[in-house]
View (cartoon, one colour):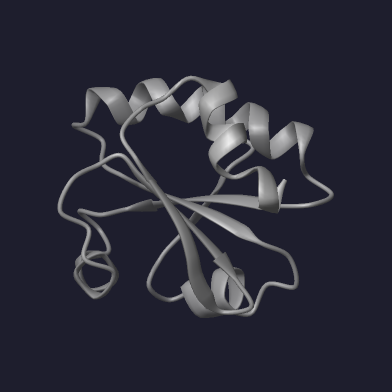
Length: 107
């Protein structure tokens, strides 16, 4: 079972921009192999850091307006949002330790 919650253009404002804690948004697509590799890693981060951060997934094929708004040109792309602002990014599938180091300020 996935710990990362799926968000859509309809729920993005409430789930991400209005969240009271930092949110890691995983921009992904079903056809993206590296995205599928990254999924379980982000689920672990979501579970282990649940009190400090929320992890959500946004399917770029189903939510093209948001993908365009944030300039998503390659996936997987992880963006951190805090207080409604895009504050950090990480591109590509990476080991858990690398992601945790990149986003240490939010975990």
